[in-house]
Image 1: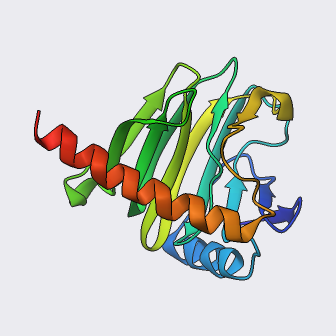
Image 2 (image 1 turned 30 degrees about the vertical axis):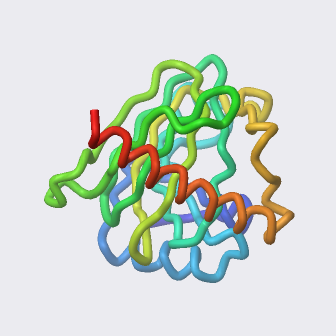
Length: 180
């Protein structure tokens, strides 16, 4: 596969017929491990202006995905390998839903499509999460709104504390859901 590096986290392929093997995923995992933010994405669309964006994304356990929502677009995710909890939050940062996700054979949800702008993040279980994401292009940074109550990625200590607290809130949310 021909890959060009946009930056350390974003790779593009220029091929008209994109084919990805387990060996390609292994290479992408190595790139994610070498990346400061613990992630990498392979874009199968040609550039940021394409009307449809399809990406294979790899996150390493411990990667912080700042809660965010997307304006004017939907997002679909299909888990290829690994597992994670997708956490949906309201405007104040309260947990409103937890979607346990995993690859098809795991018995967990393996696909979701979010059509409305909702704050969301993920808690990654296991060493890697490999997923296929599709959304509408073109990419415009202003279409992504980060939650004002969640720390910026630069503040590593605050991110770690936020994720610990969020994990506790997820546990409390899951307990209350089981008691319903």
